[in-house]
Image (cartoon, rainbow, N blue to C red; front, side, top):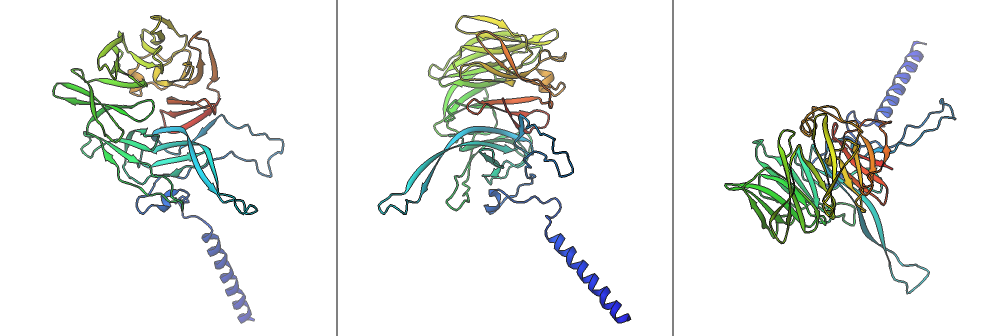
Length: 419
């Protein structure tokens, strides 16, 4: 009898151990995300970023069948802070086999338009790609930690990564080529190119084929033009003043603005890229920040006021200025094709010295979204801050899909809003 009990006990222990081993073998190791992107095909480099979990919470069987989930207008695109992003349409050519029922049929060439979002992880410098709303895939393998800013040039196929070298003083800019997909689904990473060190400001042309950048010299500063890989470099202008912010809204006109502060008069100039001369547009405005429309007809600007700041719209053709009834910083706006605006802001702002208080993080905004007619200044509220609070920056609008992309200043995460 004792032998039978012993045999039964041993059988139970073996069965329990087998079940435990099977259960453990079906689990992912703690803290290790599943590899679902092209990082698995690269020979070196690892991504410490978590996998993006996408989807709505679904009710379980115990929940009432009458529960209806309302899809959010917002969607989080990155699970970690980004250094920059781009949204664009990409043409992909696919060759399909000929129809076997037709002996003389030729292969079918099909061109597909895909909507693509690319962004750079601030933590590791990798470029990630989202096609038509799918999950992000890693598409470069150049590891550089602590990226501060990224620009996408050359038809969005080159990522300009800006970061500090280990001395924490030297500003480096590295142009990383984004490799195309090979037939087997892998990608072959090529080496990039360093641009001159200590570029203080940089901006891409509207067609993304040129970059304008500011560097210091013994006599002041130089604004240079080049390709995103620093080919065909030329000097646009030299200036004794060093503290410029650059913008390039139209093909032949570059704008330079003095760095803003609430207690310092600000100025805005434009430079014709063929004439190569500074011409004053606005000036003597404390706390001046600006955004120029693609045609140069409108300039949205903010200036300090006793309560905080006010926002104005200047028409360069009629030389008239009108005030908006909303508190909007131009940095939180995007121009539409008809030169109307979509802006993040509110009817009023907290009291403070602007834009310094917002730049320094002393003040954070809880934004609403507005679409504003520049001809009438009538606005429509697209989002009334009813779901979640965002401090929106780097707005980009895709009018074909009616999507606003933005980076939340508080978290650095990339979001989209469907309107």
